Length: 267
Length: 366
Image 1 (cartoon, each protein chain N blue to C red):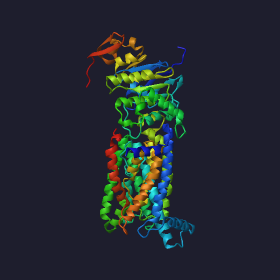
Image 2 (cartoon, each protein chain N blue to C red):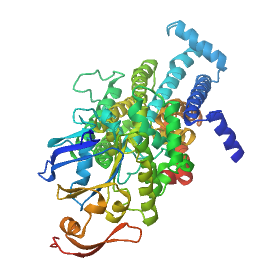
Image 3 (cartoon, one colour):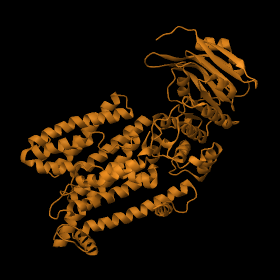
Image 4 (cartoon, each protein chain N blue to C red):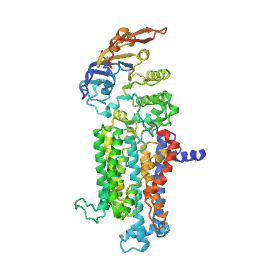
């Protein structure tokens, strides 16, 4: 590949202070302009990997490059201008409106300015309109439903204007309609110069919406590739220790139906 | 009613089309009404008192002539205005704004709207040490003369910061989470509160002096004392105000704020330290004045929104106004006798707070 990948992870290892080895020698790279699913069982190192990318955690060894430049020597403020993050769940907050919350996405660009500029404002307004939350702009953030709040946090990550957006389990407590909703948003957000990496448990949903998927198991990388090719019954058995049917519906979409746990129960 | 609200909204927001324009207009509104109200209540503080009511313009000219004379050889009116009412007004403004700023900062950093400036144990520590001085003539092992006017103030500041320090150490060892701060503050507050209770019991006939301090009063304020607290309170308030943008950011939680490039742990610790020093100076001479630091930030949020670039200046202005007004009530309700101003602010504060909770409580739900 001649082109410099948007994200390149080289031999990433993360060992926590308590000795837990969360990510083992993970290496992969992602091109620009893709919606990428990060799939794997609980505790496989997805969240740790994401936190290493946005510098919430220090790596034990390895390197993370964005556009060919290592993020390790960058300051948190510099990283905030190329990587944004949508948390799995927003902890309680008060006092801010939807508009103010999304506007905080411009914080990494404010530097010493006291007020945001008119350009910041029009960028936020456009984003709110584009993602259908404009009517909520004056509502208090903590008065929204969890689906609405998720959309607002995604909009905030979008106005941060990153190269890479990290989204951690965006649909974990949403119903079917909102799951589709959020995935449609993410799909619509992907543009030529931005890749979105989504950690998610719903494999069928990932297979339907993602251009690529990264599959992990016990801290190790298992596969990277087109979900329609990568997701097979063998892979599910290997990664999840679950017997599953992987089928194709009449529109050619993949679905995964889990049937039986075949690993050893360890309670 | 809704007409009135709409009109008020238009006055506060101006003709601004965008959010930024509205906010900038709100700042102008806050500055103008803040200065105007501060001036009006300040004039009332100078002219109204239990001894006599002086015409405001005369009171102001008395103040200037007394300052010009350097405070000596004053007429009766000049003495009343210059050595009693003026320092009280200055101290009330300082303490009102200090407690309101500290309250806003604590609420943002701890991300709990029900937090007040005394949450970190500052008040209990300050009370215990101040009472030790008032009741037992504790002189810091001879460092101060027993008659020094700064003795109880320094004791309160030292005690407040000691309690705060213990709270911080405890909270950090417990993981430095929001809950760790609140719970550590409560525990430390209880310990110092118990010490304070014991001292009150043993203080005998000095108890009324002690009680007055515990409920807050501006009765003992002199010009030197007022300036002693005014200067650090203004400096610390301005310092916290400079971090208004970051206070907005930490409302989104530690993870989000860190991801946006803020060193959250260091920032939180810094703001808590500054807010606690601020609180310690506020209680130094005037004692524990409740509810101002809790209610004023909320009133400001309801009027101007939750952006700290508006909440903090509004807290500075309206905290000062409310505290002066409360002191005016405290010295005028029963002529010839001083009520503790802390009791007045609480009596005013509780219904306001209950109203807020009923009307707007929902927006504070997580």
